[in-house]
Every structure is written in structure tokens, then in C-alpha cells.
Image (cartoon, rainbow, N blue to C red; front, side, top):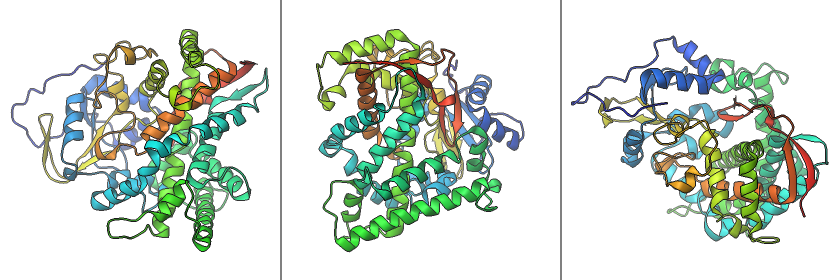
Length: 460
């Protein structure tokens, strides 16, 4: 689809790459409602480095050239800032979210938040993920149609609430679960996603207006979180293995803990980013393995080699399962772009001299659909991840460099376990064999209709 072309310029000049000349508002509408078609059309016309203009952002250089992306990811992070480019996330995550900051504060928060998502602590969640999956799929009835995405959201939300708070029952757990689901549904369609991108739509016109409902739900969630924090502090109950206990007891180099405001915003970031994205990726995986029977059969054959009640850590090492999950994240990545890099001082990338204030946006979707990297890019083919290894500038569903998602390992761990557990316990079929297409859901791309499945039987 996109050919890698040498830039004919021998000397960098401070001129942005060419791009669409249509009005900014029209480009914005296309990016909101038809993002994949718009990206593909623009890349065909202008190549793998071009400039676009989207409302609320500075001129945005879209890159799907792996060499240029490597230059960005390996450059000194101090050359760029990402926080201001993520300002559309502020209403969701709050002022203190890791995603909205750069420099020393960003590094401090990453250090405080990273440990729970790595090593032995993460592996301890294996049995928990399997148990929660079993509980959710036990509610499926033979012959009844259900939404895969609703089920995977239920699983991932339970997992993150249990991992973050140690909660999987009780009044506060139910209130949090209900309000988080409702909050995500505020931007659950392309039309409602407009509120994310168009700030002038973010008007509180009362509890029944879309943004008014969002504001009130966010406030209710914050109050529930703050109550939980205060109760733990009063009880001096910070000995738990859950992430909130670790966050409250964590100290930076100066011996300082996170403030309540920091805790609230980082919790919101974890709750949103920690379950919405995984739920969507799992729904896509369930779609593909049932849309292509050979993939499902090959995957089940690999899973049964581990015997009855396999160890979760053994499941996550299976090569074909890894390939299926990787191909799922390649063909329809949950996020279309990495976090942007806004140039802080003139920098040369791919033969262009970018001036201060230019926003560089590596495009995950376009890179993952390059024909020179991924022949037949529209075809779901897990084998491509067994046949060769892709660099972190060719395959990067979780972003890259110092802005890579801190929950990447946890997300892949959970995705593999849930998919394996469902296939080992359930016989499923698509309710409709028509292709499912992606549609915008906030800043993510989710399967339209949620992927309708039918339970046809149980596996022993």
C-alpha cells in the first residue's frame, strides 16, 4: 500500500511535508468518523510522511516510515514533549495523570507505577485472571447470542478492579463497575466520540446532557476512589498485594508519597487504560479465531498439548497463541497512533528539519499495514509472526520509547490467558459471518456491534 521512498532533499529545510489541503474542520470530521479510510487515502496520496491538520492540535506530521520512527524512538526524549499532545485525555484522567506530563515528573510517576506490572508480582495474577474468566463465561447459555465485547469488558474490568483494589465483590466494587462502564459508554460510538476531539461540545447542560452525564459520573467515581483511599489510610491498611496499596506505600527519591490528587488521577488512568483497551483487543481476537476456522483449530491443538488445567505461565509461552494475539494487535490496533512527540527545539528527522511546536505522530495502523513489511496486510495471518521477527519500529501496538505503555506486559499476559481459557472451556460460533468492521470508540477502534457470538457447547 505504501512504498518507502528516499527523500530527494539532500539538505534539510524547515518546511513541513506535503499533505491534504482540505479545511481543518473537514479533516477533523473525517478523522473522527472514517479514520481508517482517511488514513489510507491520505497515505496513498502523500506517502509515509505527510502533514495533516486536526482541530485542537498544532500541524501534525503523520509518519509510517519505520526508519523515521526509529529516529524518533531512539532520539533523546528531552528533544520532545508528549504531555501537551495528550490534552484531549485530561477530562478523563485528570491533571496529574502520567500521560499528561513530561520530564522528571513523568519519570517519577513511571517509576512509582511500573513495579506492579512486571515480574513475579504480575504472574501472581494468572490464577485470578483464569478464575474471573471462568465466572463470566459460566453465565453464557447454549444457543443464546451474546456480545463478545461486553463479556471481555466484564472480564477485564473485574481483573483490573481486583488487581488495583483487591476488590471483586461488595457495594463499592459494584458502584465502581457500574459507573466506569457508564462513563466509557459516553464515548461509545463515532458520534459520541466527537466530545473527545471537539472541546466546544464539552458543555455541561445538566445531568441529561451527554457531557453533563460524563462530568457527574467522573465526580462520582472520584468520590468512590477517595473514600477507598481515606479508609485505607485511617486503618493504616497498606500491606496488601493490590496496586493501590503499592501506590500508597511507594516513595520517590525524596521519600515523598503520591498526593491524593495524584493517586486519584493515576487510578483513573489505570482503570481506563487497563481494561478498555484489553477488552477491545480480546473481542477482536475472538472474532478472528472464529471467522477463520483454521486459526481456531490450530490454536486449540496447541493449547491442548499442555494437558488438563495448564499452568498460566506455560500458556503465555505458547508460540502460536502469541502470534494470534500479535496479529490481532497488528491488523486493527486499539490505538491508531502512538502518543505524539511535540518538538521542543529544531530537530532533523528523515531529511526534514522540524521546528519547535511541530507535532510528530507515528501511526501504528499505517505502519502495521505496509505491504513491504506485511504482505497482504488486510489478511489475518498469525504465521507472519512465526516466520520473522519485527523490530519495535515496525510493530509497536503499545507505542515506543519512554512513552510505551507501562501495562504492555500485563495486557499481553491477560489477553493470552483469557483467550486460551475461553477456547479451552467453550465451543463458540459467530452469530453472523459477515465481516466485522472497526469503528471509533473514543480514542480507540473497537469492533462494530461488539462481535456477536453464540455458545454451541462446552469443552471438557
